[in-house]
Length: 161
Image (cartoon, rainbow, N blue to C red; front, side):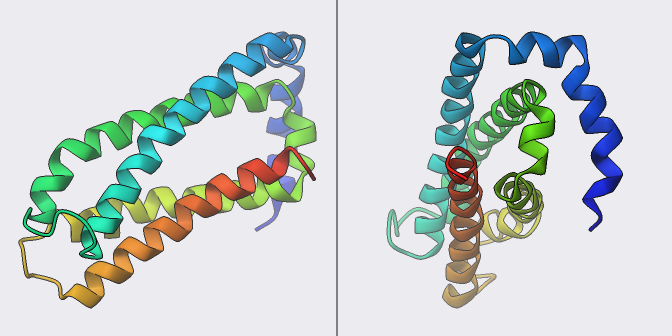
């Protein structure tokens, strides 16, 4: 993937009134990080719970689809909150963030995790009980965990590298 394609957009965002306004206040960014992490908690909490359920480690007597029904809307709210706050945080330092290897890794993992979570993982979680074997369920849960914890890990690494 050629990241250079995004340079004009990143430069524009970083110098836009929104980018300048966001970048001039550490308090605004700090509050956005609080809500960004809250979104991560909502999303990751659901992913961990459903992954453990798919692996057969928790609530074995409850059908996965029954467990997933109330969890997916919460996960979606968490994702929306993360994307909105993450976009605002990014605007405050667009060029610096964009040049970082860890930011780029986070974005790649984020796209992969979102696509996976709302296609494969969702299909397995909402499937009729017994449609997929325990091995498929377990792998689906493990992949979701690896992707989302990878997003969180790369996001945390942005601050240090």
